[in-house]
Image (cartoon, rainbow, N blue to C red; front, side):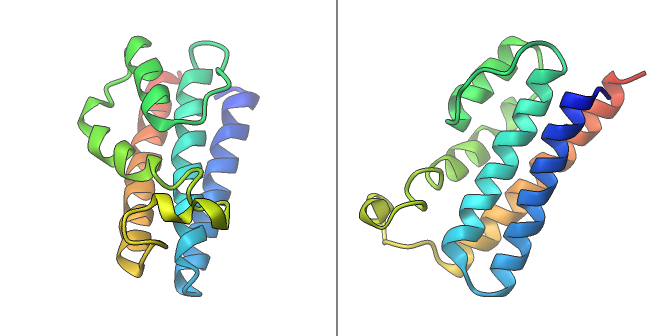
Length: 132
């Protein structure tokens, strides 16, 4: 695994660990945000293994990019859609109204963290298979 891919994975890991701490502390809004960030950076690690990473933050767009590169992530589409709603809407108080039901709940944070773990592990497996 080259240095740039390792950097993406390390940052994804930090976001995953941050989300875990935030969930335990009851800060559900930011747990969801860091879960989304973990997945975004994980997908960018995949992309980095084949070409230059685009300046994209929307998971749906990154998924399409990864699919064009041949990565088998189609089965996770609903997971990406769930996490995508937490990118902007959890960063600023005036956008929280964009989320149905307001701020993320414990259930949202738990689901976000579970999803981030699942996709992070999947990306790590794919990258380890591609690296001789």
